[in-house]
Structures are given as structure tokens and as C-alpha cells.
Length: 280
Image (cartoon, rainbow, N blue to C red):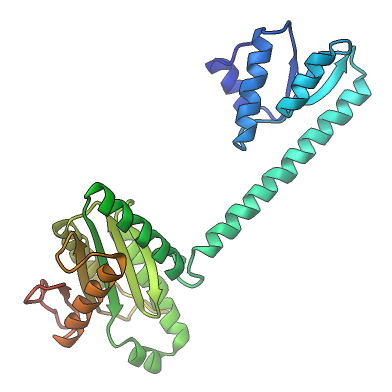
């Protein structure tokens, strides 16, 4: 069977492939190479090649490709034992891959809110800023800080505060686009990195996020409300020549939103808030 669509469909559904090798250069050899290339990528099932006992060069070629070899004529017990071993080894390999993926997710995820953590944000920020500089693409950043959150914790307790942070993170995740990166920046502060997004687009996202939080009912009984101050910065900008300056400019805009009354959006170097506070 050639490595066409039908063969690929069957391979994708298989737990193990038994491949009878034909003459040198035949289609079964090409299929074996295709299967082992998939195996190198962590895809595809394990392969056992059935090779005539007197074809030493074929046996060596199969082993070099990384497949299991069973010489023909086949000993049924040996074949069953090798099949069981291949399947068990692949199960252990898949379990290890899943474990590594789980650990990787944990390493980049904030344990409380389940959004990305500060370390992952910093890594992506530097990566995206280098890409924006290289390709002359816009890059924007939103920093958001919950207003009076320390007083909120003092009044309602840290357990309620944790519930609020989780609800806020979920609301933010619903409000951003798939291409945006949401992270917990620290404490009650969140960061939203917006690749290939100019300032106008960032303001649209910031406005949507700000309004979503204004509608949020949170806490154990879903009776509490929170407000947030938002700072927005964007590259290219005459004052932004590095990833650090992009963060600093967003932080300055956030500080101005706080100092001008909170519960509003401010842009770096903008003379006035872009959203008027609504008493809640």
C-alpha cells in the first residue's frame, strides 16, 4: 500500500503497523520511510517490519530507520511478544509526552487564575517586540489594575479576593481575541499583549475589557462589583524603543488613570482619559 490518503487514514487509526517488506525500492519500503519519519515527530503508531531472514541488508536498513524487525518465516509467539512490547513502549512514551506537556503548561500558568504567568508574559513580550521591530509591525500592551483591591481584601477576606481574581481573569479571557496574550502580571494586575495591533485596535480591546468588568458580578454570592484602571501603550512610538519601555509607558498610563480618579482608560502620552468613570 502506498503512502496515500487511504493508507494515511488507516495509519492514523492504528495502534501498530505490521509491514511486509517487498523488493528493494518497492512501495512498502517507501511507506516504511514515511512511517518512521512520522514516528520521529512523535506521530504515528509503532512499526514492525517483517523481513526475510536471509536479507541481512534489509534487516539492517530497517533497524537503522528505527523500526522493530521480525524475520520471516514468522514465529507466531515471537511476533505476539514483540507486538505487545511495541504497544506498551508506545503507551509509556505517550504518557511521558502528556506528562511533559502538563508540566510545561504548569510552568507558564498562574496557579490561581489559570491564565499565563508573569514569567511567560516576559518571554513572549521580548519575543513579540523583536518580531515587531524586525517586520515593522505594531505591538500594543494593556495593563489593568483592580481599584482599591487591598481594601476589598481587608473587608471581604482573601478567599473572596481569590474568587474575584479568578472571575476577573475569566472575564478578561472572554473579552480578548485569540491572538492576544493574557497574563497575571502580579497581585491584582493583569497584562494583555496584542501582537500586530496598533493603538486604535488596542483601545477597542481596552474599552471592551473595561466595560466587561463594569458588568461583572463576582464573589461567593455574585453580588460584588469591582472596577479597574487601565493603561495602554503601543509601538511604534517615539518613547518606546524596547520591550521594557513598552511596559514602562503602559505603567505610566495606568498610574495616570489611578491618579485621575480610577475606573478609566488612559493612554501613554495622552492628555486626558479615554473613558469617563461611571460611579458603581
